[in-house]
Picture (cartoon, rainbow, N blue to C red):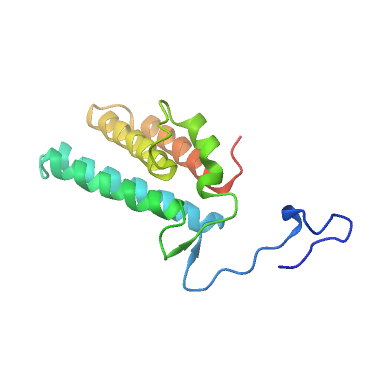
Length: 159
């Protein structure tokens, strides 16, 4: 790692540049990667739940698939997936932000899994809204805001 400036003491961790990520991994500090990462998750969850709503998939099968996605993406967010490299501010360091976002946060459950379980619930609510005939524009806007909020949290730029 290289020191950014000479004024700040060497023991200040904010003054170091992170080494480049291997080209074999996707970096979850990259906005394009995070945009796709969250979007694919939402798409897969909604597709699984839509299968249940349309009667093509039994409810327990849809739930198992969604829970599998929650676990997979939660593991990636926590740095436990070899396909992804997490940024220094991600993983357990985002626990406090996740605690504020997720109602009834359980300290005994992995924060990555809780983050994606909460996002999955929001996606399911959007699918239900569409199935009940709520305006697609309104549901789409609510989903976009939710996805953007999660993307900002993962990127460390949430408000």
